[in-house]
Length: 396
Image: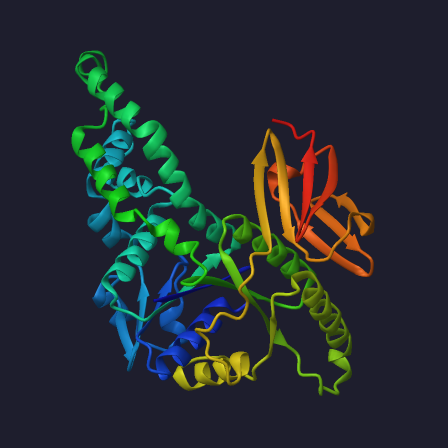
């Protein structure tokens, strides 16, 4: 099984790139499913399909060509399949506040329900072995990062709070019935949570296994977009997910002669070079802007050829773990693999939310996660082949 995540800022072309990758993988004989993780689904539109076909399938996979299926989740269907007792309790609780029944049911669809449903499908498909490849069209960056954090959060809740909460509610339920009309969750609610967690068990190992799962970040040659790509790069690394390529999408062809595009060409060239510098040694795959929309299988196959050339899209294009963040004795340590580095050549500076690392003529901009932004001091220690960056004086 091979799993590819395509992530990036909204509007950079993730869905087109993910769909093109799926088409190429299917053409090579791999049973491939493209699964949309974005609430604003557009896979059917990219394949130029009648949306009624997907509506009839109620969020189940739809075959679009030999060896290729697409799936756009229907959150209402997923609530029935996965969240029944939990959703009924939440909507009943909201109903007691005075909200009418329809509105209570709508508001009981909490953030994270769709993401958990997607994780359930990933786990299910890996266990079944039904597909050779899963291509995941992610939501915009912020929602994607929430998605990959869910397994860790749920595991913490189940281990630290679930049993205590269940015991307290069981003891308090008889008294609460006499004192208030606000319902406490029943045993069905807690059993549903247990079943849900058991179905998710092991998905974190799938996501962090680089032999199975890698992330490809889709970006455009623009300052704001590349900044967000840097931030996503760091967070995926911190969640121990392997990034094997950056896809630089929608480059203007170098041969353009119209004066109107001259400034754009210069700007894109500058930011493309910066991206290669920022993300080195992860490969950056350049893709020129297509004439017209990319709709339908033939155009998607052409896009795949532009992205991958003769490469197999299911190959791993980069295999090293670049960053690792750990906490030891109350201090954060960011570890980078940099063979042959010596302490005397290392210069560090922190500007806003970036750490700037300079080693001779080599310079890397590292987007810092939120816990490190308040660090009062930043120092370096070399433990070959690693450079360890230590953050001190962080506010609790």
